[in-house]
Length: 106
Image: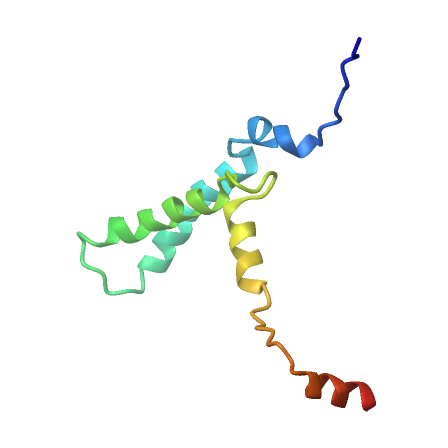
């Protein structure tokens, strides 16, 4: 008779269910960004019809940046974007045997 085996599952597996909403501090940041957008729109020569869209762009963009990422657990969208931007973009080329021998002899 076979016994059931228990597998240990890392806590990150259930992280999507635990952390899918904005935090309170994120809400305060989004609400305060309306004021920042308004202050930045004062010196700009914006037409009266365009100014509300300019001011509204700040909280909307911050909302999407501060949302938890669906694919990377316990990370927000802006953290994932910064990781991608900071990633080294190095392309490794295959070396020939002569180049390997030359490098080893140095």
